[in-house]
Image (cartoon, rainbow, N blue to C red; front, side, top):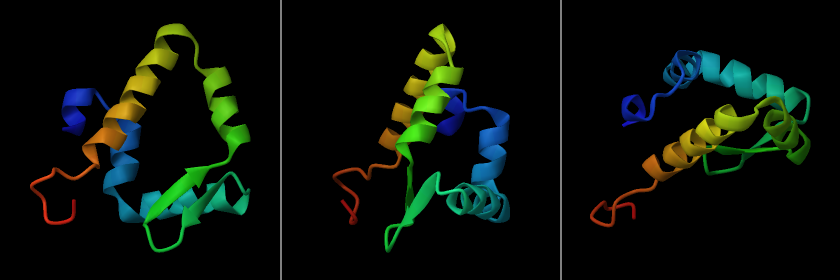
Length: 85
């Protein structure tokens, strides 16, 4: 599904490589820009980082990143037919 959403190559590379993902989230955690949610395997982004990312992206890029984020979140929601639903 990620290929259908035109996910940037750098993001796919980090998502597919467990060590690269751990390094990226570890760096963000060390600077208190993200924190892991215990027992969930997920993270939350600090509101200042969220605003800064929004500030850096403009116009169509901002809209594209918003659509990508929504698509990635939606793709992680299990189907009603899945046992984990």
